[in-house]
Image 1 (cartoon, rainbow, N blue to C red):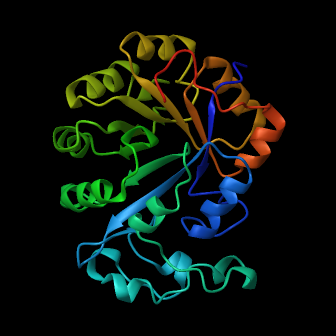
Image 2: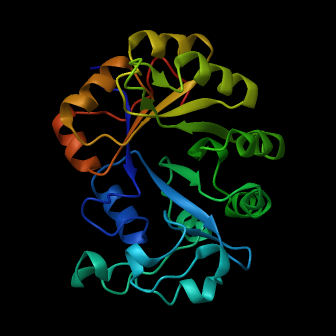
Length: 262
């Protein structure tokens, strides 16, 4: 174990507080997380809100499509009660509110769930916030969106998100290592945010490092799995249980010697 991989709260500390809320974000800081990852979508009136799903039914009871609802409509919903009465009254925060709550020296991984229409409002929120670009990472499964953002916001680092599927007949992972590297090169991004699968082994990490890419891994709660990725020297691990991982693994929050994560 390198003892230098950053611990990032997935949707905040979502094991103990309602995901993607200010309560979950505050809990992550209390548990000593180095940063948090949260999901963001564009509303019908052009505001960016913190929510994973395309609609609110799972976490709010009342089911509204985010893209068709206004910020005012969305912020009337209670997104905490589903986890228990102690969390009743939690509201959907905006990106601006999450940025304003970011402590000095902590990281915010912004996963973008909308398409290219989110780029201009995102740029506006980021520039207004006064948060230094090095505290932020922009994540998306859409490589074209990240290419667009690198053109608009050259000072901000972007990482392509990918998950994998194992083809049963061939035993081959898709996308393959070569396909991942090709996408990273073609899109002009700064790094990979990879699902925590066995395809991400020592050789794959070495290949990514040789090309100068950051490496972030999601979503890892098992201690043995987290230890394996820390031994590989990845830059960060996203987890629902940041306090538990820090306690069990003794992570220091220092920069990985293999990367460039300020």
